[in-house]
Image 1: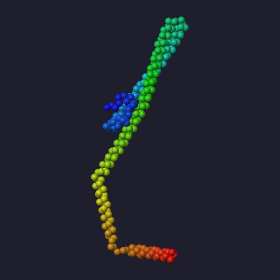
Image 2 (image 1 turned 180 degrees about the vertical axis):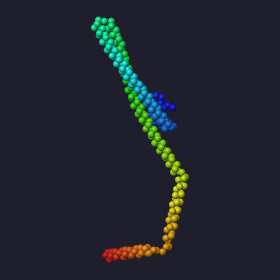
Image 3 (image 1 turned 90 degrees about the horizontal axis):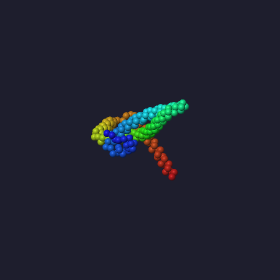
Amino acid sequence: MRVFSRLGDIINSNINAMLDKAEDPEKIVRLIIQEMEDTLVEVRSRAARAIADKKEVERKKAEFAARANEWESKAELAIAKGRDDLAKGAIAARRKAQEMVELFDKEFHAIDKSLDKANEDLEKLQAKLKEAKAKQRSLEIRHGAAFDSVRVSRHVHDGRIDEAMARYERYERRIDELEAEAESYVLGRPKSLEEEFRELAAEDEVNAEFEALKKRVASRASNP
């Protein structure tokens, strides 16, 4: 399945709009990225071939420029020797060589222009690829968050959790009953000697505080 039919479709595409309309956005974004990466390889291969062609044209242009200079020198030599016929032949050959130089020069500039366009397309394509990968990452995060939310909701509404909580509450109740049973053994037990002395000390403290309070009240009453 192809998403784009040509490079221009990729460069001018609206990825968000495409994914909003898609039934399976994650599948579509994977296809988009794969096609962009394939197109990127293709554009780079064409650019590499164009660079090689440019070098070959440049080399041939230099060869014919050298031939043109060589025929011009031969024409000058023929004129100097009084061989006008040879001079005219050399001039004709130089003209043909010069025409080839001009032809290769035009081809050189055409290739150069196509390389500029390829470079521009590569920059736009890489920007689109980066955008698509960012969108893919966003979809993965959203999918993961939704999956976690569903999983948590399932656990929250799972009857096994309610059952576990009920068991825990029964366990707590059992502990409370055991602690109460332990405390019940203390009830009605005769006080120890230490407990009786503690109670006596506490009683003395209460009496002392009571007497001090009585004195303060009496003092305020006598000095209104």
